[in-house]
Image 1: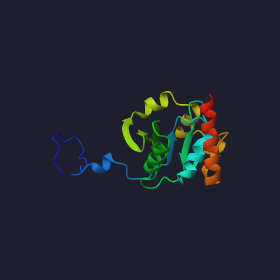
Image 2 (image 1 turned 30 degrees about the horizontal axis):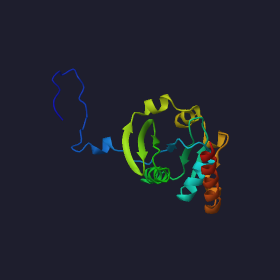
Image 3 (image 1 turned 90 degrees about the horizontal axis):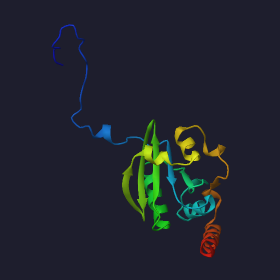
Amino acid sequence: MSTPQNPEEPELDLVIPDDISSLLSPTSDPELAVLVTQIAGAEPLAAACSLAQLEIDAVPTEIGALAVLHDLTGDAPQQAAAAVSTLVKGVPLILLTRRGEQLSATRWQDGVEGDVLAPGLVLGGAPEELEDLVTGQTTVAELSGVVPSAGISRWKAMRLLTSTARKARKK
């Protein structure tokens, strides 16, 4: 500790670490991880996640379904984003995570992590359901139309996705 230039100033017990990487990278699992997709409904998203063996709650919104991830440990959110973006080739999605007061957003497409996005810009045009989840004003249980992937068998998931694809081709 150094002597203050001005004797009237209090001494500060301040230690600056040599390696500041721990300050820059997240050290804990997120409290919330949501995949923001352009998939038209909650059921097709839940079916796709069921096929990818991901446990999520799919929430319908006017811009696309949200997948609220159950497994938040380690790199599970990134693996989920890679799996879902691989299943819906050519359609980007956003992985939005919250650690305490800190939000992060990353674009994913075709199983590959893309650009880091400004969370404020992502939330700027976001549906109300996403804003309420991220800010903690609501829980998944309080939202309507939620479809859990856990209740969808592989057979039912395939039938549901085939039916959805057929309907999309007719339009």
